[in-house]
Image 1 (cartoon, rainbow, N blue to C red):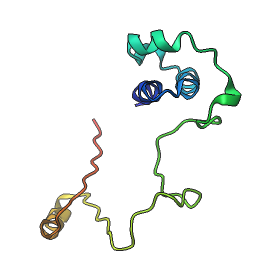
Image 2: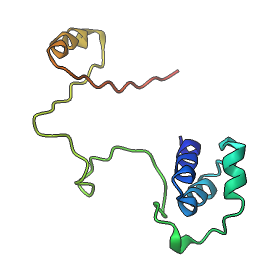
Image 3: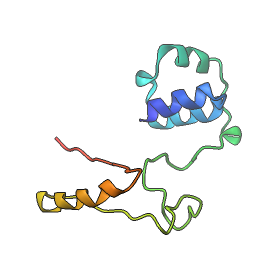
Image 4: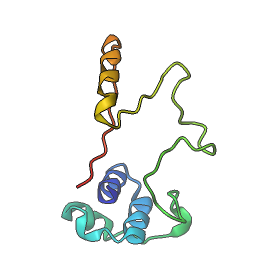
Length: 106
């Protein structure tokens, strides 16, 4: 995921952020060669890096300090965690849009 983030930032012209995230997370070996070539000319300056500088993490963005990303009050989230919960899915069929987030473990 971090390598895709680095590539996306690079393509959006945010080279400082891309280099910072790439270096902090040591994902150089997972970034495409054309992106690495473009970033190789960037002289990294942490003062120009607007990305997270303490740590980079993918985590829920609905923490209190991130008020800007919340589901509307009329949107509900239903957890389907076991076979007994599967019948709950039928209730979703009445809605025009359904979002699915699935987690897989080996």
